[in-house]
Image (cartoon, rainbow, N blue to C red; front, side, top):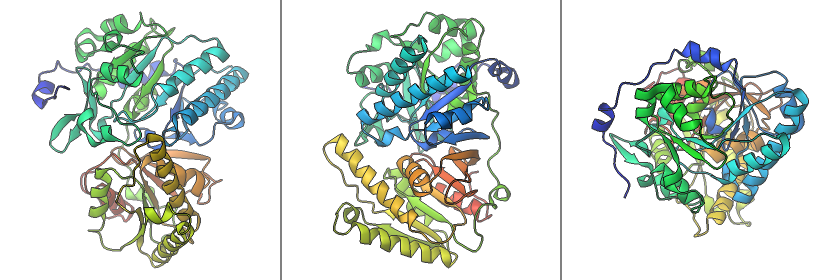
Length: 478
């Protein structure tokens, strides 16, 4: 039985370590640059001023890496595919990174960015990265480091338990709806036990290295190094972190000169990426920063594909706003060959008309979840529904004032397939944990502000809050 964390336990923790972030940033300047393989586009939810590419061809990687960025993202969207396809994608990406790295003489660290609620293809993706990069570069990795904390979304790790803020309480992630995911379900919230579960016993919980809050806050760099310096290729380390100060202290140890010879595969959520890249936090985006890029005479477009309960609550609250027009995409109709095309055409026509009349159009999938007892079939259903949403976006007329895509698979497919995005800039966050991209010139809607809204982030009013920002009405809770 997973233990339950109380806020009293958090209050009793030692005081956080304090790291001068400007000093940390100066250390980053002398460390390897970071390449993030993002299994869906929501991993940009903590950074700003960085670029995302949506293909991993050698020519694309060469163009980006030649500019010597401190950090860039490769959107693989691998969470939406089967394990076999995810392994193929990670293998191909690692092969191309190795080739371009050798051509340009550029070294790098690799982060496999994944969901903060532990969904995704672990350890298949990290194993593929390790095996390919070791085979093609001669590098030797010193194990995996797992850091699933995502503070903006209320996810943190304490006493090796990964936890989720749920309303006014804190629950183990294994007790949340995310653990019941049709494709990536799991049982344990205790990270060492979770590793054993996901590796089918290949890695034993008792062998997992743990960097505790006490290691970070009391022992500091010497205690952290005592845990990670002895690590070898078969080791896995879980890092406890309750706030950004914990990640900053851990990162200071990683960048210590005594640790620079070590090379790890990182499997993390979004919070670690910003710290490891030395990116200072910035204020939330203002309405003034978001007014350009859209057609002010048209309404905006909100596309909702995510099925988690949090999204459904946000969807219902959205219609408390005036000036909204909704178009439901019936999932059963798009899963039937006989009615799929007509359903896509109908919804596209309704949304186009609404936006042309100055209304904000909401295209959403019917809320009755269609599931199979086979995880691979559930991924196929998700892909088919997402492809239908892409079809709707492809058929829209006019340029929306803004676009919000709710759900990881949804936001990736609409960007890459529906809008033809090959490169985008992350300009910042519109509410905590919700990034905004400026679409590249090659896309169907160049310069548009595109909101990548994770399915598992935000309170009941979150989507409505984002719409209010684009309407320059302000938003609660910003």
